[in-house]
Amino acid sequence: MTRRRIGLKVNGEERGLEIEDNAILLDVLRDGLGLKAAREGCGVGACGSCTVLVDGNPISSCLTLVRTLPDGAKITTVEGLANGNDLDPVQEAFLEEGAFQCAFCTSGMMLAVKALLAENPRPTEEEARTYLNGN
Image (cartoon, rainbow, N blue to C red; front, side):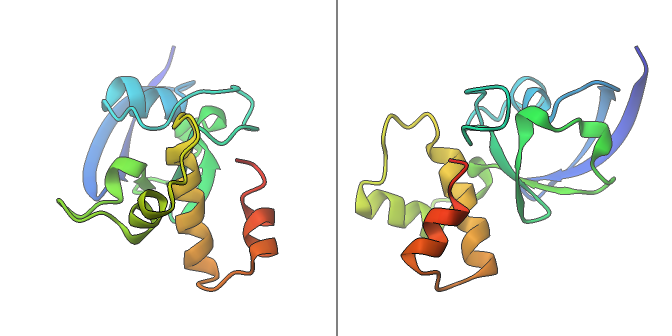
């Protein structure tokens, strides 16, 4: 198997990684970097539990080959939302509203909401439901 080096900025930290050509982003995050919030639920990109942000856009990390990412891509997992001890406003809102089900897909939902609000700071309920349809 061919290996390659790629540089990524994961949760604000520059990471130089040596990966197999067939490395899946979810596996690299969980097994290689110890970031466990993104999870594999369905393995086909339908459930949203593996959602991470790549350059601000929500993607299914279980379907993403790391080699397809641009060198220097900015990856954000839910572990990277908080600023030290200060939770991100999305995390605060989830806590305040009790917006948790079983918590398996919560990290993906938070990241999808973060991306939605970056695109549209004041979405209607219908716009939010449509945007979050994959979760």
